[in-house]
Length: 126
Image (cartoon, rainbow, N blue to C red; front, side):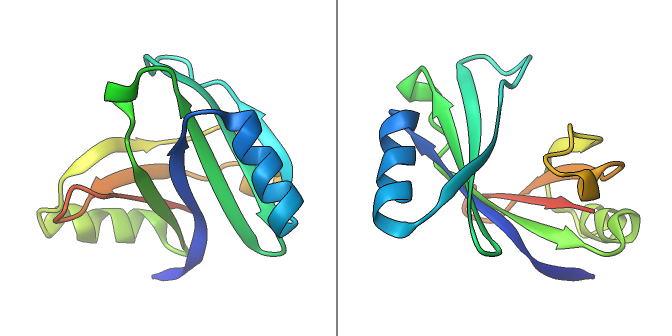
């Protein structure tokens, strides 16, 4: 079952401006940044942390590709949760795969993205 929200993500027009804003005004600190090969117009993804709260900034270079937002849950039984949601007919946007770990604890984790009823993306990892 799901145990907590891992992060909330949204698209930004200027990642440096957004990082500066959240670091200066709210105390977040950047802890990870990466390219996303194979995803056209997605320049960088940046993670900022404040305690246990993580924000993910997606920097799209094409306004038409702006994906809005998503949230990510942590699963303590990835395969069962994936199968349960798939069997319920919830659309899969990104099939399960092993992402690059942001921290050593995430080594070996899987990731998947489903789509909610209003078009929102629901990611989970575990």
